Amino acid sequence: MADVSISSGSIVSSISRGSTLSSTHTNTTPVQVKESQNVNLTSIQCEYTPIDITQTIAQFELDDSLPFRLSKHVIKKISTEFVDKYSAMEIQKLADLLVALVYIKSFKQIWSSMNIESPNEEETILQGISELNIAVPERVDVLLSGLGNIQTEYGTMKLLWPITTAKTCLVNALKYGSSYFGEKVFSRFFPPFENGYTNKLIWCDDEGFDKFYHYCLRYLAKFGPIQNKSVQDLENSIPQWFLDENPDYLVVFSAHLITKAEWIEKLQTYDLNDDVIKSLDILGLQFCTVQSTTLKSLCTRLQLSYDKFESIKFDNIFRMRRTRGTGKGCLGQLCQSTGKKSYSSAFPFTDSNRTYGYMLRPSVFYEVTNKDRALMLFSKMVD
Image 1 (cartoon, rainbow, N blue to C red):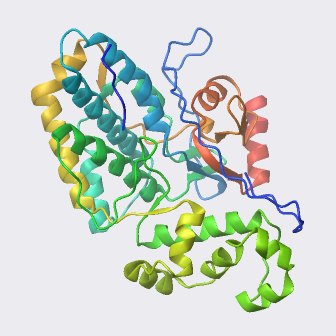
Image 2 (image 1 turned 120 degrees about the vertical axis):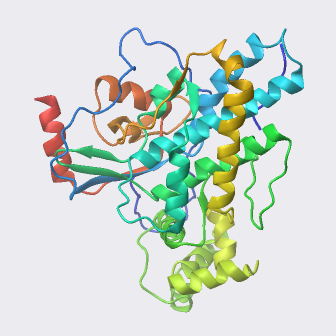
Image 3 (image 1 turned 180 degrees about the horizontal axis):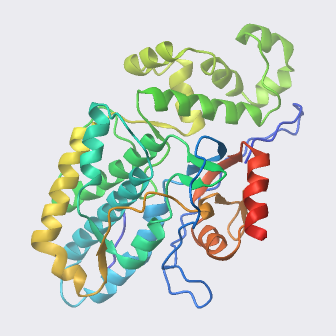
């Protein structure tokens, strides 16, 4: 066989000597895309009629590794089915192409759930990518169709930083697509792919600042209530042992106090000694400068190359499907991994939503922002 590789709310407590940092767990175990004997996963969409989308019930952050995890399963099939037909190098190229297509389809699904009435220049470019006719294996397509903003009759569950999340899918597609074409990516700041995928990206824009600020708050809240003080006053008011054991705390605290204009300037100058730039590494965020025009060019070339040269190869082993995107996500997205074999969910899911959440663990963070609306929604589901 050819060896194919594919390159909660916050808890607030008082500061104590036992305080430790904990990072959100990301599960990179391959998702087993198999037929279910108990639950019909050919349709995982919520069956609600949206009558009130002005209320936000919850918000969540998707796990950027999800398309990669889904790809692992189908890549194994490629290596098995093609081992006697193509060289190891050719099989690797086809694997790279398929991963890129899965990421583009993930983008299309997320984008379909967004309602952008007056798109700016970049959003217009991204809209063009969403109209590409991309094919992926049917079972992968079904699972991806649950991604995106969720609308119910009692309100919405909003995807945090949706444009950034969608563009992150395309940066992953760019990496694998460039590998398929035998090309290198040139950008001032191109993120690493140490685990076979890149995640937690930010751009120098409004969503990037909001994501950075949110990550700062999430980090600081792990140590207790966030003080409304200057850096110097805070440094003088907390125990020295805490500063010794958590030297990054003041760095992130300082970074979260800056304005958006200051933040943009600091990213543009990118001084490695600045607290904002230091905080990126502490928070696990990756600054990216890849332009949407580059993403569109690569995605368009991938579609053309697949249709002209590769489609028949994939059709021989998969049932490939082309869909535009469902326009809405499913409730099962509000589920995250809490360990190798454990998970938590925002709501008491049943049936397909529970299966979807347990299989994929799609989120790395979620929080319920309107408990009354959530109770109304799930009371009706139980009734």
